[in-house]
Image (cartoon, rainbow, N blue to C red; front, side, top):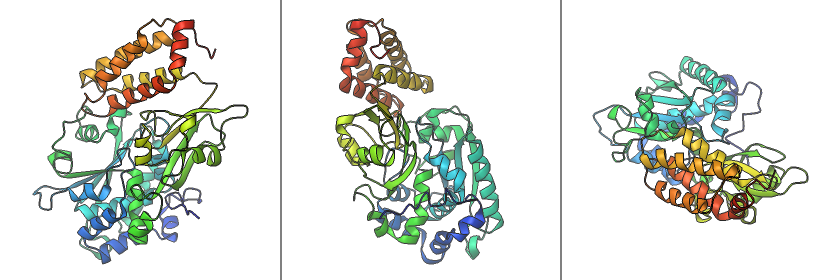
Length: 421
């Protein structure tokens, strides 16, 4: 039977306090890492576990760490991406509010592995409680020798700093986040060079997501084989799934990677609301292409969803029932991306502007013949032609809606009204 590990403390009273975390074995992984492993051995351990980044891209974490130059001549930095701006996603917030020491221990072990002495947690400013809990936890960890100099009697020194974001979705993109950390306008950088070579302040930098870092202490304590034994071999480990939308039991679920989307929605989240049927599900935040009800047997892991034409992304699962207009859904999603575009790339800036105008016209019953072809042409012009994946996500999502629910767009144009009203 699967045993939750990342959420084991979230329902424990005072789970955010150091004393509670220590009772459950907190900071034993850091003690073990400093006492029994060299930094290179920690990197190899994480490589062997096949931990893939939980922020969206799914890049192998240990491999990312190994790209950091051994002798850089510059300080090395660890950055935690806690911006979590993807609609429908709230897993990182829960960790930071309910079990912040799990993240701090993950940061410390990861920093030891890559040779960093400083970490920045880039957290969205709206997460007021999470910020307060993280600041409190950092202070407690410092007072008890888990942060600072000579940590646990070793030569390792490490500090964590909180940096509040101002609510820009683009800061979830790692290089735009680095620009914001440096006090600049948040816009993606051209890669290469990649952050591992020239990141924060042009120094070697590793950027990991909150959930990714929270996995690290458990890998150190239980071993890479334990981690690989959960879920599919190419995408193993425990996974946090955020379920929202038109479903009976929305919430945060920790389950093995690769669980079927149907099982997640119908068994764990209770299925659709009374009298309704599931129409479609967005599996990984609104940048992930929608999955129609007929395809819900797909596994919730990186490779299975990619093969199905979607992506795991942030694992923000949004359930849509048969009372909802997909034209309205598509319009709201593209409006979001248009609003959050940083404006650096012409295809994204101008393409999304025109896409929103056409979608609004169709939704209002003023669509014209050729509008759907126009939308497809706009998606083609955006996809693959931008610095970051914001434009790609918008184009992929709209393409999927047009592919699976084209008849609803046609009905809006031909009937000059929304059939769902």
